[in-house]
Image (spheres, rainbow, N blue to C red):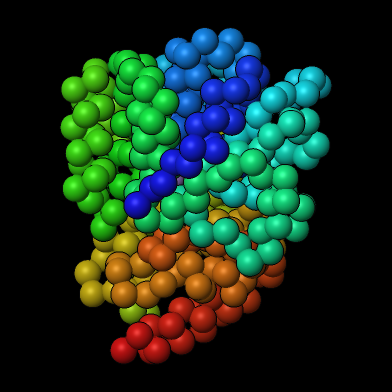
Length: 327
Ligand SMILES: [Mn+2]
């Protein structure tokens, strides 16, 4: 159960200026949560609210109400409260040296073992880290409710998007009574499911679809795993970037009778980002952790240096071991 502490409520009530930052390479939950929180704070008279994402807003999320308020560089001034959403380390935000009197963390990821590398946790005034929450958007919803902030159409659209994305369109195992109940409230408050779905799932740029075609041609299957790859050449050929391959890992997971699906993305020469997805039995977060990455039980990622062949060998060995141990 998400517990919104009275400390958190008072940190918000007693302060005037807020800077909200989410993680690098942001998606719907990070951006939707940050914007919903910012809009909520403005509703209770907090005029000085800044929303910060180092990488800006991905094309597919520019429709979100108030997406234009997102900045990529922190203003120089000192804020009363720095709120980190949908991640729990300074490193994940991609920012250093944001000046604030108080720090707050609102997230649903398990903190990595070395989470306090930056000394951040010593200065945290309040935190809600609930790994059971389907989305950070759920925690924001509860926070706004606890602050008695009415959910209007713009807030509802941001929160519905957060929830939609992190539940995989209300399909993943985190599609709980709680998440559906919240969706119900948000639609009641003005969120339009089909309008949002069209923006999120039915607005793929043509070049991204071409990239998917090239990547799907690499589909392979072995020992309970399926995988696809995107190489630097494929990006070049289609004029695309990493952003265009965001949900590619979902495709090999659709294959029948497999436990783990993998997506290998060449970020620079001999550096690969690996996304891992589990069909429910294998804890892929553990596997990602062993390579210095992180995530959740069913969705995780890591980065490994080496040629594609070397990287695949390392990952396949780890996944094979995990599948064997789960039997
Ligand atoms: Mn999230």
